[in-house]
Image 1 (cartoon, rainbow, N blue to C red):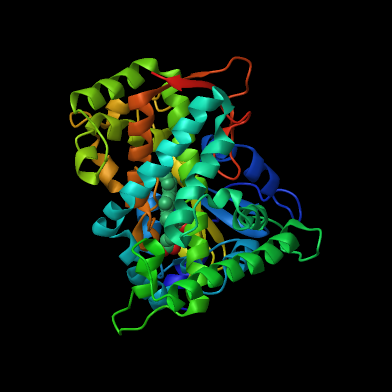
Image 2: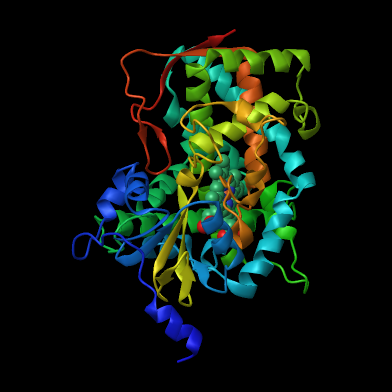
Length: 443
Ligand code: HEM
């Protein structure tokens, strides 16, 4: 035992409660949106609990984020619940680490380079306009399920080349697959996990059929799937069919729920703050934003960007990320043993009073150039995570959010219907409990 290990052994574990035998505090963690807030107030910025069957340290704040992101692969490594790992598949970027992860990230990034992303704009604009026209015809609607179909159709068209994916058998299989992602991994015909495993088989067959068809016709395509079919790593190797299928599934999953939550929050918060909506509208008018929208003309919308940034601060679609301690370490005077699970907290970091005064307030101007706090650079604003695992689709997500918001606000108005519960449900990503009921029309 080295002297460093001996010193470490003497340090206390973080304060906190491990909850009930077996289940620990998993239910409170999943269903109480204030789970971390309550414990943060009681124990401070690092505390222990037990969730998903593992001793867990929750670490809050910019310093903790910096420590974890900088020590990825030294003290910590990304981890997912067992059900998620199995359903994502063995090749999925999200479940791999080390050199394989680094090289695959580079390869997949070819579909997210600025030039590639810019080429997706016309598809995003077309699908957005179709949905906007449909919602106008409906007049009143429950928006959240519609927004899920909308983001899924964009992902399906770009990553699989299938239009209206949400209405196809692949769309239905995807729903069943998603329902098992965070479940107890017992595979029986009637369990969520068992059904999701079956759905995974169907999805992979469907994706394989699409890929083989493109290869046979020798038309690989210019969409994201086409780029991935042609992408090579530094050694000149291409993705095998088996691997490509897992990566496509990951992109469908990663890019769908998160974006739905982000745009639903935009719709909700701007409806609740009409003066902010009017400022976005004025900016769109002043910049004469007309179709086709491009990354270039969207750049002039600096106020809209501030609003979207604030949406992702106040209601981050991903509340935090999990890591596993691959070596014991010390943080802020506490010992974290090897094998513990760690969660970094996006939601609570975004509520830190010294970074964000009046943090519950929706105030896009906190990101104006004159107010923008310097500390943001220091991992105090992390809706897309950070370090080696930072969101691969960050720029794609921002583009889709900009296009959606610009077309929506330029041409339409919406009003929240009375007598609905607007409190947020956290699972799978934050959204209003009653699904966001609105009256929708052209302005
Ligand atoms: C507003 C929308 C989005 C948000 C808030 C978001 C957030 C995040 C966060 C926080 C992580 C890091 C998780 C961790 O640290 O363990 C992540 C990872 C990832 N995201 Fe996103 N994401 C969004 C949209 C997208 C889109 C559109 C795509 C692709 C189409 C995407 C693909 C990925 C992938 C592949 C990873 C895993 C990266 C890796 O393990 O190296 N995301 N995302």
